[in-house]
Each structure stands twice: as C-alpha cells, then as structure tokens.
Figure 1 (cartoon, rainbow, N blue to C red):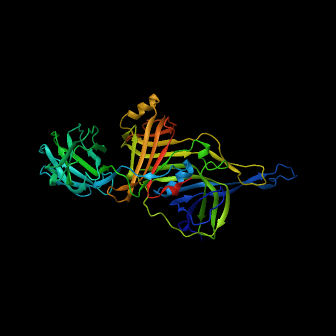
Figure 2 (figure 1 turned 30 degrees about the horizontal axis):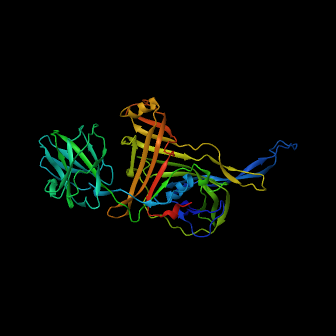
Length: 487
C-alpha cells in the first residue's frame, strides 16, 4: 500500500519546454500535499443510435495540472519565484543586515524598585520576552540592564532595533536606550544614549529602529539598558529581540531580486512565457510520475497566528506526462519561514494588529491546443492581465487604514521574513524573504458586529502596477549564486 509520507517531489530546470534535462534534480520541494493530475477530456458523440443510453465517448485533449502546497524554505522558494515571476538579475552580495545583540531570554539586572521576570505569553520571538514591573517608587535613571558582548563600531552599526511593549502610553523621550562599555547600564567613559520614540497605544508591541548617536569611540560594549528620563509612576515594560543594523557586505550571502516580466524578450520562449521545470512526483509505487514542462501559473502565500509556517500553494500547468525511476531524496536543510519571523509594514510603518495575511500571484496563463496531430498542449499562453489579490484579518483598533479605504487611497505594503543565520559574520546575515507591493487598493473593509467579543475585519484588496515599473518585488537572501536561478 502506497504511503504519502514516503513520497517526494523533485524539480529540474528545463532548457527546452517539455523536455527533462539529464542529471539529478535541482531541488526537492518541501511539499505538504499535491493534486497534480493527468486528466483526459471526455469527448461525447452526439450521434443518435437508437438507444436511450449515453452515446459513445472518446479521449480528447489531455490536461496536466494541479496544485502543490509547500512550506516556504529560503532556497527552494527561489525556483518557485523564478517560474512564477521570471529569472532574477545577477545576484549581488547581501548588504546592511540586522545582527542579534541580546535575545532577551534571560532576566535583566535591575534597580531595587523594578521586578524583572520572563514572559512566555507576551513575546515576539523565541521562548520569552524580558518583563520589567516598575514600581511607583522608581526614580529617574537606569531601570534595568543586561550584560552583552558586542562591538558596535566595527563593523559600523547604523541603527539599533528592538521590540518594546508598555501597559501605559509613553511619549517620545520618556525612556532611553543605552549602550555602554560599563556594566549595569552605567554610562561610563564611552556610551551611547538614544531616546525611545512615543508608544501611544498601551499593550501594543512597537518595533523601534533608532539611529545610533555615538558609537565611533566605543570598543566592545558590555551592557544595554533601559533608562527612565521622565518619572512615569507605576508601569510594566516588556523588551524583546535587541538587534544592531550593521553596514557591510556579505562574503557568501547573496541577494536575488525577482520582479515580474514585462517584455517578451525576458520570457522563457515564444511557446512558454514562464520558466518551466520537470516535476518528478514519486508516490511510493513503481516509477515516479514526470510532469514535463511544468510552470507555476499561480502562487498563493499565506500565514497566520494559527497556521504558523509560511506556505505557498503553487498552481502548476504542464505540457506532458512521463515516468522515470525515482531519484534519491535530498531535502533542504534550512528551516522554513514562520509567523514570528514576519514583519508587515503598511505605508512604511510597522502594523502590529494583523493576525493573518495572504496574497496570490496569478499569471492567467492557459494551455493552448492546435491542429498538429497531438492531444497535448502546443503552447502555454497568457490569457489575460496578471492579478495579485491581497487579504488579511486585522484587529479593529482604529480607523487609520479604513479611512484610506474610504478615500480610495492606495497603500504600500512590505512583508518581510527574517529567518536563521546563513552567514555568521560579523556582521551576521540572515535568510530573508521580502515582498514589496508598492500600491495596494482596498476593495472591502467590512466592519460588522457578529456577537460579543472583539471586532476584526477580513480585508480584501489587490496590488496595482506602480510607476517604479513593477507591481511586486520579491527579494531573497540565501547562499546560492547567480547560476541557481539564472534564465
């Protein structure tokens, strides 16, 4: 009896549409399910033959298509983007990156008027956040600090980046972030103190990116601290995932930028505009099935606070079906992107109220048949405009984005996943997937009361072509060179 868990899907780049290239698969997809099917058309005769039963039928055109659902890993997804969007330009060395300074997974040193703890519920990354309960007796000064070892000057740090949450509203410069060569957050001879921006909504996580002020003279910093500049009375503060934005160029990590093809000169071939692959589908019985000339016609990316691993549903159209002895399985060792890796910006600002997000890229291609003594597709052709539907669920906390919907104003979206380290550095570079949508038009923003409890909105929209020359841009950072995704 065949078992799904013994199956695999390997992919091999094609140089001629519908013909497998000799050699091992380029990659094995980390798929969760597939519906790739060979389906013949049922041609039904219309001739009357003196009986009440259905007339004779014949085999007509063959359709080879279906979906592959996979978890998004930082190397194999490049091949999906290549087929769906087109080959990227030559890869370049990854540039400025975030590198971890303090993971906030341990209790901080603290003043007598502060009670520190670890919070496994209110967190943004990892297992815990650092929680600081500040009493009304706390004085202006350092509230808590954490020992680190980090050289902010070499290579040069341009910004500090961290998450903060507070149970009261904070104004700009109520608190400061301090980096020092001294322990316990004391400023000492070499330190940097930067004001923390306003946090207007109590209980909301804010990701702050703050330019450094004075790190040029600092050697190895050994502490970070939170300092109270204005007496705020009693409050609770959470801090999480402190990073440095480091200027530099990677030695090994590469940046691949995918933008949708516009010119026929950038397409694969006149008979197949998208870049094709041979899909080897082994189903734990006999030889593997080969879907030849397969292209990713549509690609849906979805993740949420409940479905926590980023998944891609790939709508595949193929030219023909074959078989081959199954090749040995070799899966990607990198981890998939997950929900806690995600940062979503709307209009350039971090939005912390979304609980699900999805977008679909649809090339609107179809298989085209001809009178050429064959019942398999003779071409894959474009059959309409490309479209990108967008959908998300958001807490109804204010009317900011709703007002843009009413006004018909298009908004810029950026969805970024920052995964595991791919180059240790320093500076460290991370597997990253960033999707930029320069213009998103809201189509529906339903605000309804369905019963007791909090209100959420299931928003729908669509991405539009921008004067920058693209409707979507996907930037992938991994360790593969230009040849991996080349035309």
